[in-house]
Length: 293
Image (cartoon, rainbow, N blue to C red; front, top):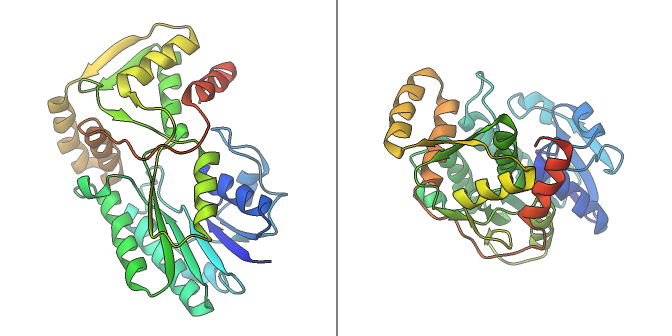
C-alpha cells in the first residue's frame, strides 16, 4: 500500500483530498495544526476526516522542530498548504513558500517519489500579489528539486463562491467593477479526484475548473434567486478598489493581498478546462438551506 502525506489537511481541499486518497486505497498521513478541527465537518461542507485517516501529525510549518520524521515512509506528498486568512503574525511567504519548502526538504531527505502541489490558475497574470509570488516561488523550487511533481492550478473553489450567499443573507451584494469577468470555480471533491489522478500521471501542470462558467454578476444573481432575497447591490468601481489597496498596504500586507486578488480577478477572465460533475447551483441550494456559507 502506498502512503501519502496530506499537508494542509484541515482545509477545504485537504479534507477532500485525504478522503479521496483513502477511498482509493492509499494509507493517509495528515498534517494539521489542530486535530480538533477535523472531528467535525468543515464550514463549507467538507467532510469530517478525523476517524478516516491512518495517522494524524500535529505540526506547524513555522516551527520546524514539529516536522521531524514527517515524511518517513511516505511515497507521495500532497500539499494544499497555504494562508487562507490574515493571522497578523505570519506572511504568505512564511506559509505558502517557506512552509512548503520545509516539507519539500523533508520529502527529499526521506526519498519521497512525488510531490503534488496546489497553486493558482492565471498566476502569471497576478505576480504583483505577494501570496501569488510566494506560491510560484515554491513551484520554482519544486521544478528544480529533481523530484517528480505535479502542479495543479484551480480557478477557485466553491467555498470561495459561498461568500455570495453570505452577502445575499446580509442584504448587501458587493460587486467590483462591472462584474462581467467569467470564471468556472470547482468543487473540492471534484478537484480532489484530479489531485489523486495526478499521483499516477506524468503531467507536470494541470489547469482545472468546474463544469459551469459564470460572470461574477451571474453568480450574484444565482445566489439571490436561490436564497429568495433581493439584496442591495453595492458597486465598487475598480479605481476605488485601487485606492483601497493603496491604503491597505500601509495597514496589513495580508489584507492588501486579499483586496489585490479581488481586483485582479475582476479584471481578467479565469476560465480553465472544464472538469468535474458538481454544479455551483446545487452547492448554493445546500448552503441556502443552512442559512450561510
